[in-house]
Image (tube, rainbow, N blue to C red; front, top):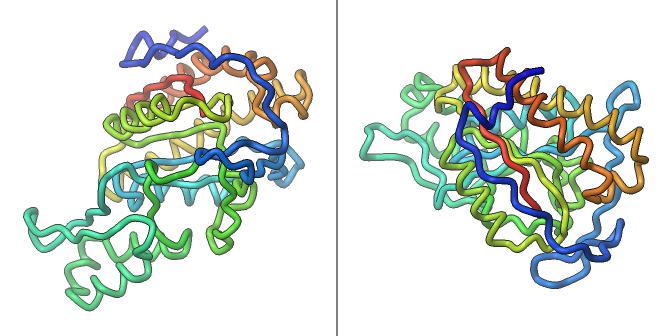
Length: 283
């Protein structure tokens, strides 16, 4: 059996589940107290009809690492959304003291691409920024900020985003960050939200250097981790029944939760250059 990765890296103690309460399997209460956050069962299937976990990838600006992982997961037919944890989107500029700064949730990747192309196409093509933004604008519309995400609120307005299918209900099973400070921000934010949906979520960090080459390798590693987790989820879902599993009931998912440390340990042996963290949190 693989060693528990929590003994090899920083980990946050697993918080106890919130008090049991009646939670509808089809209607989840939004963070604003409304009951319009419809959470349908996950109908996203692979080509062979298998169940798919729902994923979320996170980095600082929702541009490089999280978007490469988003694209790779989406291309593998996993339901996926992505976010950044920074206060603003920051992209390299002509010098370290002159970054290009944009707002989350409103400035599209296409607008960033066109602006930087007009400023200095040669510079931003040479440093890979235009290629990155071109990839992003064909994957989703604009960078989103994690702290602004209303968990459980419908995301049906994101029809042009690849990977949105299966995540319209606004919940995910797994969050994967790409930097330890982003992991800290996500875990702290989840704790502050008070678990309004009483739904478990596994939060991982795969530490990836913020450059285009490392992002590509990291995206492949995240896809490998996602596949391992999804294989285990399929087995546990078949044992416990899809109804309780799809509703996110803790009792139905306890077997899967207990398998995650070993899955992560085996994954870490294959990817020793990408230090990983993990904790179980609650939406």
